[in-house]
Length: 488
Image (cartoon, rainbow, N blue to C red; front, side):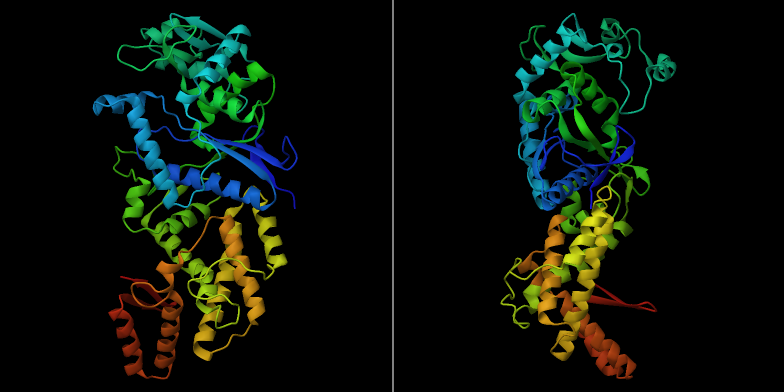
């Protein structure tokens, strides 16, 4: 069962082989901290969180680095509007980032380097580029000479001659920055200080770094010349990741990363998410509306990570229903463990000494090993959860199960383990006895009792059960496909 990954650099799926056996050095281009994180950030952070969890699950030692971009025009603009400072704005939204990610169950990275804390590494890298003829100063700025790097465009597949043909109409020749460049494609490594902006001293004068050089320096400082996985959103392939390669590899002569992985974008009702369209949704707005964080994780994981994903009310409702199914399976041991003689009961959690189901774990791993096929992995979880729900209903009705308690314990612990790989975890206290007074399993059992009463034409009993559930805030919806329910 070899893990294979689609590598953006080579445009093909390849076996995963690390620089150092058994260890993974992984870098994710994090957020620019000028605002609250939105659904696009949620998808990226969930995807790379699960990638890291899965690599650890199959035995790798993972060092996971995620940066914060805390020098940027957008941060400066917000600071100006708020009569604040770039540092204060960045600190506020870094704090908000950790709050949002904690709610989504994102494990913290091993380190979160910030551009402002990497200034020595940034300047050292620019100096080396200059010495090797890949960079040149110009009136306090420093630019990267793109045409000096023969492999420029190898990640994005873009060719300079093709881009040149479409660029002439968009160039403002009066732009002072354009006039400083030797070539229109050259990009800034260092920007001369402007009045009123924060600046750092450098060999080229006071100023601040360009965006692209920041990540090259942070990767090198924290992980070395060549890493195993460089991850980020598909919108970063060009120019950001392309420029990172040009900067880093021009200095080291080594590949910056063995595997370049990119997650797809999030659309909202089929359209690109933007503030101007009024469909811009932050993570905290979504969760404050009552959407379960685990339903958000499930929504993200139901799509192949490289493809675009469309956020709609119907999609999040389906994810919520799916999470109810998995959650019920996760809580099976807490609800029925004592009754089945496991020594596990309500208020207790965790995986005990029972062995997992080897064939199920093997199938899960074989499925996910195909380019992180998390949707396929989810099908394994649903099968386990549905079987546990069925056995729970039988236990409620008949006082015993069809499957042996030992086998059910293995099924439950397998579900708990594999769900944990995907970061799907249920809260015991909130779920065992909800505000309605009924657990999901108890609701399903009453629906089954109601169905039996209807078949027996005992409509008074059927109505009594429906009214009992309604009084507890649970609405039943009958259709020819069966009875669905939701909490009010």
